[in-house]
Image 1: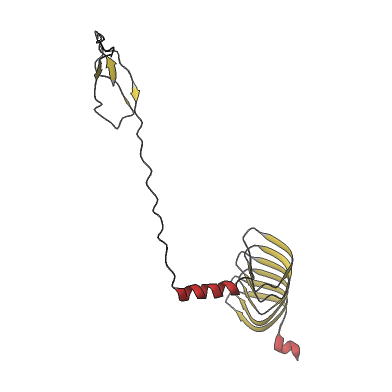
Image 2: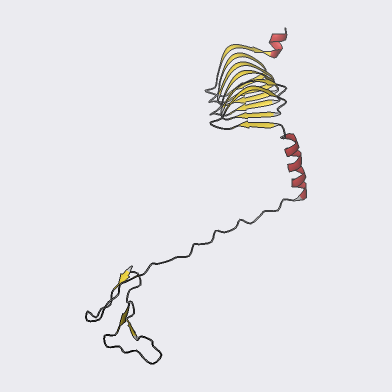
Length: 185
């Protein structure tokens, strides 16, 4: 792109005269002067592109009534325990309003309200609770005072006592299974 003239003489200000040949194609990475008698210099040109800015999400405003409802929901969900996929938990769980199992739990539940075992979740142990929804595997002693729902992918085995039992097509229940009403009489 730049080359010194062959017979260039310095001026009084000691500058060197240069002949500039424009690049005819900016898409190429390298360009060379076209006159073979001149000393040539190869200059690499890198194309630089500015990153595109990421749009900032616009915050949504929640009405005050909705905010109060969210606070009430948060109060009700303060005793919520979620065991995520790939996590194993062993021991005793007490005073939990809602237990969601997507991993593996071997435990004894005490003073818990509801349990949800997802398709990927497994529970082994004992629980006496108000309600349960089983989509994964439950093995052990289970007493559900109100509604026990076994989804189509759910498998329950062991000693099971229930207030009301709902089983979707494909769901399984095995073991010593009795209604609480029939167990009392």
